[in-house]
Structure formats: structure tokens, C-alpha cells
Amino acid sequence: MRLIFVGPPGSGKGTQAKRLAERRGVPHISTGDLLRDAVRRGTDVGKQAEEIMKAGKLVPDALVIRVMEDRFRSGDCEKGFILDGFPRTLGQAEALDRMLERVRMPIQVVVLFLVGDEAVLERITGRRSCPVCQTPYHTRFVPPRIPDRCDRDGAALVQRPDDSEEKVRVRLEKYREETEAVIPYYERRGLVRRIDGEVDPDRVFEALEKAVEESSPKS
Ligand code: AMP
Image 1 (cartoon, protein in one colour):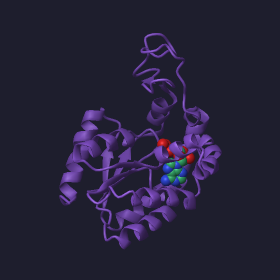
Image 2: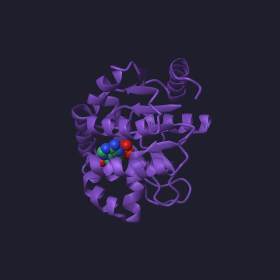
Image 3: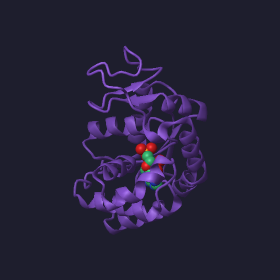
Image 4: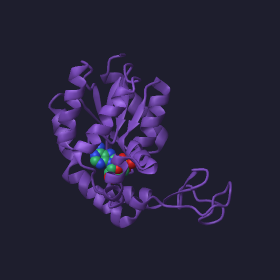
């Protein structure tokens, strides 16, 4: 299975991608995770991406495409993959097509997660995590026992620099301006399946499995 997950930030596509990838035994590839890792390691790419990511803007296509080409080369994608957060522009979608044409492995399904702006803001601005053990929290949905402290080790919880309301609004704007353009690109090939991302996560997962089952071959 070769899938792309598209949706605004906070639409749950990362969580769902992880779950489906584990169940199907294919890699979950998130360009956000790959870029954050590059920033942590202080690589060339990381240095160029860091400030742009903090501002909630999009990292230039050339850089993200390089990251994806490297990721595909690691050799675990033959059985398929789930792309989460890539492509985010038309230029990236075209570059992805060129990469996949070379190995004759076209995209089979594009899953679009539908979530309104209000839900996105509530979900993302409440996200916190423990810098020590990485346990995720949410100020409203999964609050720690003591406000702003990790239940496990008492460390002060942190917020991703791009999860403030101001940065989430920028990210939503970039999504509307740039990323939504990839939907008609795949729609022309009949690959897009829409999923309601505002219902509870188990129901989203059921709908996701059904959509993928109905439209993708077993390969
Ligand atoms: P995410 O974890 O998917 O929300 O991505 C976090 C940030 O990484 C985004 O706000 C962008 O700054 C950057 N990023 C991730 N994927 C891409 C992409 N495909 N194109 C451009 N920037 C990206």
C-alpha cells in the first residue's frame, strides 16, 4: 500500500498514520518528524529548516524533496509506505511523482482528513509534552495531575514552538494557500478519499481502514 495522508495541522493524520502503518507493517514517513530530527542533530538541512519551522512556515521544496529522496533510499519502502505531511505543495507532488515513476510504484490512495479550524486550534494549542520522557499531554483532553508537570517525573511540560495560537494560524494559512492545491492534482486521477477527522479516533481509524480497503489493491 502506497498512501498519502493530507489534512490541516492537528487533523489527527499523524496519529492515524502511525496506527495504520503498524498494523500493515509499512513505514510511516512524516517529513515533520524527519525535519525535527535534522534540527536536533544540527545537520545542514536542520540548520536551514529550524527558523522556518518555528515560524510555522513551509520549508522550501528543494530541501524537503532532498529529505524525502534520502528517506526513500533507506530501502524499507518496497512493501509500501504512508506519507504524512508530504507533499505539501504542488511542486512537491510533482517531484514525488517523478521519484515514484522511476521505481514504478505510483501512489494508490490519498486520504484527506477533514477538520474545521476551531477544532484544529483547540487541539494544537493545548498540546504539551514532557521534555524528559516525551509523554504527550493536552491541557484539556489529557491533563497532567498537577498543572504543567509530568505525571511520571515531575518535569515542567513544554509546548512545541510552532504550537502557539499565532503559529497555528500561520500553519493553517499555509495549508489553505499551498497544500490544498494538491487535492485537485490527485482528484483528477480519482485517488482522493475524504474522512471526517472530527469524530473520535477509533471511528476515524475504522473509516480509514474501510476507505483504504475499498480502494487500494493488497500490494
Ligand atoms: P508537521 O509535524 O507535519 O506539522 O510539520 C512541522 C513543520 O515542518 C511544518 O510547519 C513545516 O515548517 C515543516 N514541514 C514538514 N513537512 C513539510 C513539507 N512537506 N513541506 C514544507 N515544510 C514541511
